[in-house]
Image (cartoon, rainbow, N blue to C red; front, side, top):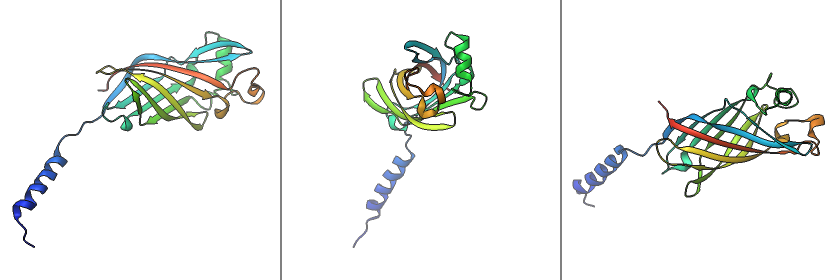
Length: 188
């Protein structure tokens, strides 16, 4: 077999050039504002609450949504339903137990593009020391200051929130609707 040095050098040169070529990379973002809210009912009366101090970071490249990352830290002690007695109950040991579990955290790796500006991600919520999968469906605007608006459904009993006598579904339903809207700026 005859080898021509040019037939070996050209493919090796092309391979080296491709390996050295810059690849698209994800942009890192931090939250600049937004809201994290939930809604449920107590004895048939709907009420809503929020976590004003939540913090979110995101890494996202629209060309590679499968490599995206989302991290949400939720300080539970700042729960606000507009009723101080209810807030104190939610902070207590039967619900969030903030003395033992100060924060909840939602982390997700990989977004599924659903078309247009719609995505979903199957992340993990850690609440009261329990980790369970939670799907977040959301829209994500494009640009240097994207905004994420999403919804999820969470089973409170899967995380032992409101267990014991509070586990009666005729008093409080199991499913809690969670909504978020987060404005981002590029991370420094």
